[in-house]
Length: 96
Image (cartoon, rainbow, N blue to C red; front, side, top):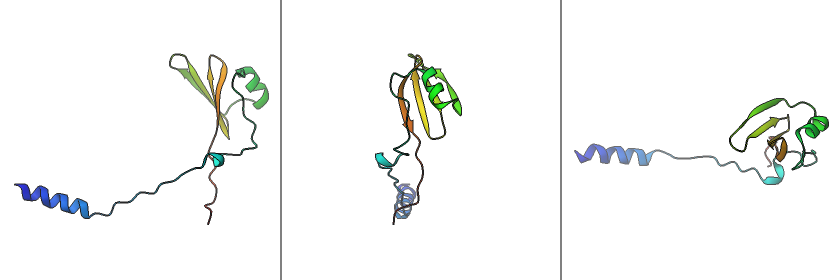
């Protein structure tokens, strides 16, 4: 009874195991020259400065947190005030 389990274990251990790790350095997450909304800025100010977002996500949780997605960044709001802005990763050709 123990041999099928032992055989299966040996077969599984013999299989090649591999994974690729992709690291994105903090400074390469997007265009560093791109202006972003700053903490404390109102939704109205963000609208005036950057225009309508590509997508608006409804508020969830308590306190309610909402998100606006623009082409190159996302803005997180709490009660109508910016709490964070995050650049989207822009893939680049690998360095050789």
